[in-house]
Amino acid sequence: MAKKFQNFINGKWVDAKSGKTFENRNPANWDEIVGTFPKSGKEDVDEAVKAARLAFEKWRLVPAPKRGDIMRKVGDLMVERKEELARQMTREMGKVLAETRGDVQEGIDTAYYASSEGRRLFGHTVPSELPNKFNMAMRVPIGVAGVVTPWNFPMAIPTWKIFPALLCGNTVVFKPASDTPATATSLVEILVDAGVPEGVINIVHGGGGEVGMGIVGHPDVDLVSFTGSTEVGKKISEVAASTLKRVSLELGGKNAQLVMADADLHLALDGVLWGAFGTTGQRCTATSRLLLHEKVFNEFMKMLVDRVAKLKLGDGLLEGVDVGPCVNQGQQDTVKSYVEIGLKEGARIAFGGAVPKDPALARGWFHEPTIFVDVQPHHRIAKEEIFGPVLSVIKIASLEEGIRVMNDTIYGLSSSVYTKNVNDAYTAIRDIQAGITYINAPTIGAEAHMPFGGVKQTGNGHREGGWTVYDFFSEWKTVYVDYSGGLQRAQIDNYDK
Image 1 (cartoon, helix red, strand yellow):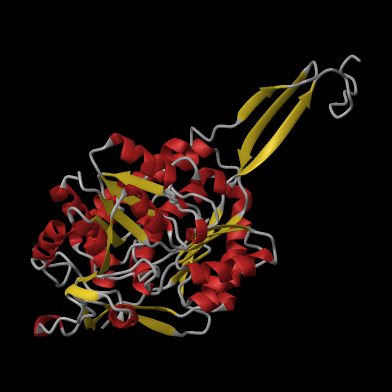
Image 2 (tube, helix red, strand yellow; image 1 turned 180 degrees about the vertical axis):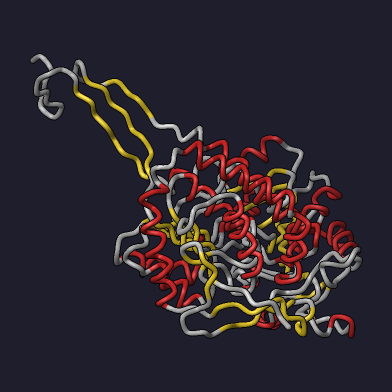
């Protein structure tokens, strides 16, 4: 019998008010049910927001270093449960164990970073233009944070949002992806075990339309942090505008790796394999375009096809597996549709392009790693986010052309350039329109203590990770202390004529 999971609202594990549930299944073996989860609705969201609003009044008064102590305990518990969490994650979303362990480690790193920020929520003191007056700016909590997260990094991305939100003194209503609710539940269990008080963290399972948008549009939710598609991000922005709540959007990407003629080709090969086919290409930072200089095009393509042919598809829990399944049938269908689109546009498949025929993979949503050549920059497979193991290869003749092609999308998240020429490297850093640029490294590999986010339609300008995310989850308050004993008017001209 499948394990039954519940919402967590105001310190209690509860079913959805409606009593409805949905199943969570293993994408590598769709016959295996990971668990059943509450299919929540508006009433459940209302209860969670009410609990978070009440809890905020006490939680905001807990000293930030004490909140940091709880975050440190969270990190310690994640270390203890790392293997259990990684295996659970692989069962429900498919990526291989080496990657899910890394996903958990990202959460651990984020917890320890957050714990230290409890003693580092720095403000500013500045001189006043008037005598006997003190000026400062300090950070204060905002209120109830709505956190809506995707399935591809079901531990790391929620920690990027929830840990800084809590550390800054906010309370949280958390809606995880319906494809990865078990990992999200485990994260909440860890927060509770570490000592987060009741009402401070709440999790409501269910669909994006009912629960996700219910949180976004709720008048008592003060800020929203969302990671997902650009299409959904635009809808969230529209709904949130009605209450003028603060919104952070981390959206799509169409990231490119540019390989120049002087590059270390073996290093670049390792980079594109990891960037394009790690997480089965289901990353917002995945390498979905490879821009190859014409002088190394033929040599590199032979190397690439030879290596991709050796990648092993399968259940991510098994040793030796390199590429897991797509997360569900819908995602597999999306990949298949883009393969058809690429062929209709005139691109040619250099490798893969189909659902594998291996009977051992028949019960999962697998798709072969796929490489397209003869791709033109205007092709849809070169412009649209596929979110699957599909790599579009484009031949370029110069650095300038490579950067121009790289920038020719609505997105601007991650980018990568392989070259030994320091001048070309710094020109690329200057001219590439992206929030992240790697030199001689793949488009994936963000570190917890650095800002993460993009430009153009990849987001709305906020950053996750590092010190920057703490500005999103806190409000600046300006304070003036006048100890002159008289009325001083800063906005009246006090200077001698």
